[in-house]
Image (cartoon, rainbow, N blue to C red; front, side):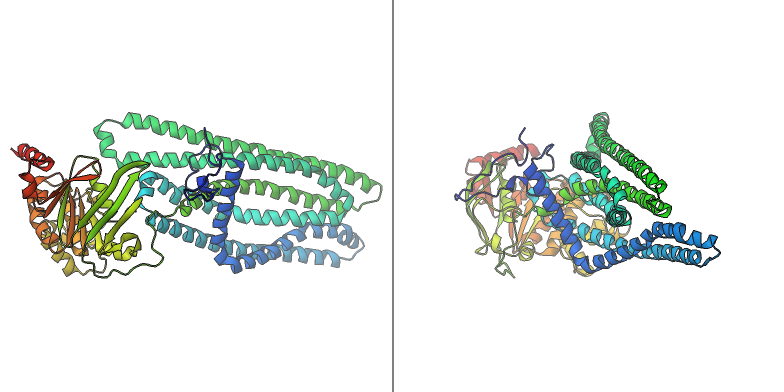
Length: 621
């Protein structure tokens, strides 16, 4: 199996060297089981850059927290030193009848403990606040970015994966910031500071303590390499679980209609087992690493105690110094376990950062123009000039030339896969053509600002998707600033006012999830009212009447006369009644226009549209 990063970089079509990292960019590596060393290095660098971008606005707060942490650890480190002073100085003085040194040592220990507690509180509150602000920024950034990515991304990147990025991956980072980061900073400072203190306190004992470092280094390297792979695998299995869960309950009607519960349960059980095994591997690594660190710490402590005891017996070392050294040594190895716990969280968060940074690295295939041409009041003329387009290497439109004058209603007909929906998507700039141009009023669509284009071109899709909220909220979706009078006027024009007022709360009725409170026809009519209120220059109806029953369709056909007046319209439909209101019919086959003319003329011409027309008529008889 070829792994991302294993292939050599090629060259572009113009002879320039291709981007050596092209195979690793974006979400390309998400499903890879293995990664080359170069790919892993690239992903780590990308994750660090993202973390740096998130932390950069909080630099001052982080420096202040570092100062607080330094002061807190100095207060914490004072304890063992003061114990040694008490044993070697205060106790002999007390035996001699002088309690003063013991009082001062006691006061100093109480003061250090209070300072440690107070500074710890300040640090935890400050780091918690910074962590939550970072998570807020990350969630908003990912949500905003994913919304702006083109349809081509969402068609290949499932909603379950997107949900996984915004939930489990962000939560993994939250766990790191809320719990692990505090432990890491404290542990690192403690290890470095205590290491220096041990060498200063007694150099021979310090050198004995350093004997355990080669073993600790080898153990840490093994854990780092093994856990990186393990935690990347856990993120993959969690995402797969969420994807399967989302798809199952998103299509619960189909699941129950075809009695797929048993099969879906088997799939869920298999994915759940994969997830269990992935986490079991990660937990096993921690279960080996942490006891091994403890074992090395205990062996070093025994060695120091034995060597120190011999020196005490020879009179070469004070008892208080040995006690202080052993207390510091215990505090030296305890933070190493904290680092292990942190590394557990860090690897999980790092794997999550890889996924999040990959999504954020994805770039739109229909980017905003750097120097847009303003289009304020579009007339609605559409021109397809030598347009070629395809999906995944398969050509759908081999070379399309078409001009639609402003104000003309054009019906697109043809068999499934003829290219009708592709043409409509190009008109709305959900995709950019591979060759040629699509122009609105003479301006290429890729030169028009997205806000101007969305104002000028509106598509009503087959699904008639409604969002949770009131009927009025859904009608005003394309114009959030519209008043209630404008919303109701749009509904009346489209023929929706009567059934809306019959709802329990009229225009304020909650349509529930996906508009489940309304029938399919009612949802589509509300979608038409939404488009009418948006008042675009170009309206694209993609199979938009396919969900309507006969009474609703008759109602909408009358409303469409009003909706389509004085605007350009592209209508994709398999219903005769919808096609009959068009000024012009385009019959498509294999991405080409094979017939073009008024409906009445084509019906009498004996061509493909005439055959379709007869089939429609026969189906109504």
